[in-house]
Image (cartoon, rainbow, N blue to C red; front, side):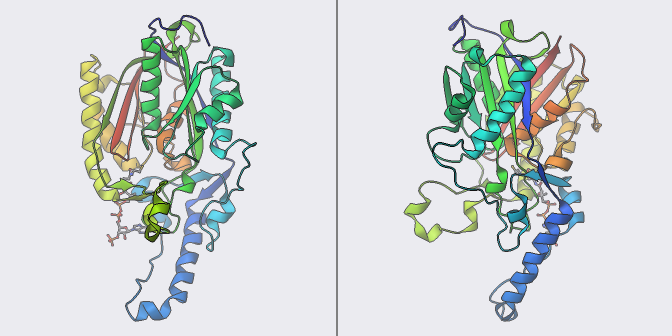
Amino acid sequence: MSQNQNSAGRAVISSTGLFTPGETITNEELVESYNRYVEIFNADNAQAIAAGEVAELQPSSVEFIEKASGIKARHVMTKAPILDPETMAPRMRERSNDEPSVMAEIGVKAARDALERAGRDVADVDAVLCAASNMERAYPAMAIEIQQELGIDGFAFDMNVACSSATFGIQTAADYIRAGNARSVLVVSPEVTSGHLNWRDRDSHFIFGDVATAVLVEDAEMAPAEHWDILGTRLKTVFSNNIRNNFGFLNRASPEGEGKPDKLFVQEGRKVFKEVVPMVAEMIVTEAERLGIDPQALRRLWLHQANAGMNRLIAQRVLGHEASADESPTVLDTYANTSSAGSIIAFHKHHEDLSAGDTGLICSFGAGYSAGAVFVRKVG
Ligand code: COA
């Protein structure tokens, strides 16, 4: 536990870390496997389809996926079972209680990357938040497992705000620092989204990819010379049924629900698009003005990575003009939607070229609905 607990600090981002799984699935590979599944399903159900009892499945298309979303490929933890038309889901060996969980393992990799980049000794870290859209188990917390793996003396807990988990985690960490309850907090987002994506659903089978990110939020007084001041944060939630995942510990209490597709990710993509774009743009502009920041002067937007069209519209409304790739970088093409990790990957990969004094915005949005904005300025 570091010194000076309970004296208020100024929160900054000291560094970020990234773990990218080695395996990739291109749209071509994904569509080939999906369409094979469709052929098998339609052949197996030919009679019922002819009798009008079962709906014939339609093939997916590479062109549609890229045009509708901007996604070209995704990283995954286990490629072969996802592409096997008989399985179409990730397959991972069940770990014993003596081994790290999958989420802890990849979270630790991202966390070590962040610690190394900041030159931070783990002895100086006070807390770990595991902020992600799904947890591998109920307890003990994945965050405490990550804390244990890293050898951190302090406290840790899991938090889930779907796609906005990381930005909500950053504000939570910043609040601990501002209140003097911690000086150095790791916000870790291991997103094994392949486990909650329905790879047999044509409308969404292309959406997600796996990754882990980490953000080291610290008191400015202990941060490395080069860091990002957190100028302000704003969180917002508005209830919506348009993105749901009904998997939960009470599912076994209602066996009639078992195996239904709502126990995986489901969404009304069009409605999400239409409702979330204005909500997020309005939140960003209002908060920027409250902080005395001209939204049109933001040097870069590291937006949530769900859909290229959504980002284009949000960036346009915030900046007042069509954003260039330099102003609103994308990682959708190679990572797809990685839930809460997306805006952090964009920041991690696209911040080094900015100059001291440049102001930018990390912003997430997704299920809940939930949205989080973190305004940052480069120092050093
Ligand atoms: N391959 C080919 N065609 C497909 C298809 C696929 N995989 N999936 C759907 N289509 C077809 C539909 O059948 C429909 O055809 P029709 O017009 O003949 O009925 C057409 O494409 C449009 O489908 P729709 O679902 O309305 O597509 P869309 O343009 O809304 O794009 C999303 C779908 C999911 C990419 C888009 O809605 C989106 O990204 N929304 C926001 C999602 C989001 O951010 N969610 C948060 C997750 S955390």
